[in-house]
Amino acid sequence: MVEWLHAEGLTGYQAAVTFMEHRAAEIAAGTADECIWLVEHPPLYTAGTSAKASDLVDPDRFPVHRSQRGGQYTYHGPGQRVAYVMLDVGRRGRDVRRFVQDLETWVIAALAEFNLTGHIREGRVGVWVERHDRPLTATGARSEDKIAAIGIRLRKWVSFHGLSINVEPDLDHFGGIVPCGITEYGVTSLVDLGLPVTMEDVDVALRRTFDQVFAPLPATAD
Figure 1 (spheres, rainbow, N blue to C red):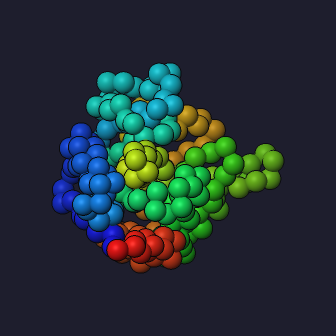
Figure 2 (cartoon, helix red, strand yellow):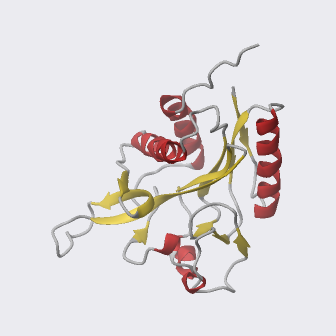
C-alpha cells in the first residue's frame, strides 16, 4: 500500500528532507508503508551531487540548499508541484535505471491527462515538451522547453527526493541558475503553455496515473 500525503501551504526544504529520511528509514525497516508526498516549497535552489559552482548564476537571490539527490541545480517554488517519492526499490526489482524511467513515464502519463505530450531526450535529464507556438529551429526541429525535473536518492534500496512539475511557477526565478546544467533550452509550465491547469488538477492526474506505471509491491512470505 502506498500512502499519499498532501502538505498544505509552503513546506521548508530542510523539514522536507528530515521527513523523507525518517520515512525512508521506516520503510527500509518494514515499519511504514511506501509514501508519495505532494508539497510546494518557498522559492529556493537545490544543488544535487553533480552541481557545478558556475551554474549558480545569482547565489544571493534565494536560499541555496545542498541536496543528496542526483543531478545539478534546480529551482523549487510556489506554483510547482513537488512529488517526493519514498518507494521500496529493493522490492521493486533493484533496477535503479528502470526506476528512474518509471518516474519519467509517470510524469509523461500525468501530462497526457491534459493532452500534452512529454518527451525524454538522450543526454537531457527530465521531461521536455515541444513548442508548437514557436518557429522551427535552424535545423528544422521544434524548439523544446523543460517542464519537469527528476532527481532521486536511494538509501537501503528505498528512494527519496523525487520529481517536480511546473504548473504555474514564476519562470523568471529559474534565471538564478543554469537548470540541470543545460543552457541551450528553456523552462516552461502548464500555464505558460496556455493550459488552464491548477495544482489540484495535477494532483488528480498524478494519483490517477500512478498505478498505470507502478505495480503494487509483491506479497511477502509470512
